[in-house]
Image (cartoon, rainbow, N blue to C red; front, top):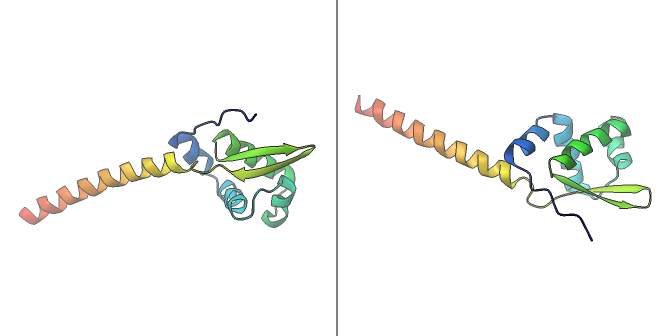
Length: 110
């Protein structure tokens, strides 16, 4: 039986995605997963140990999950894990859209 999934919040997701290397690792897993740290290290040009550290941050944020088969750890994207960040961005974007619309009306009324 698998352990219960960690449900990330927007802060955890955005924090994990703040690093461009982590974004590249997540994209590689999304496009080619499940992948091992060794498989990810080749194309990224960074060491397997560095990839493993980035994967640990992504896993802690709930963006990837690991499946261990013997000594091998394969990472895959957790479906829906970007939803909290997307919802937050939608809320913030809508608030700014409302503010800008009010400003436009105010300026138009002169």
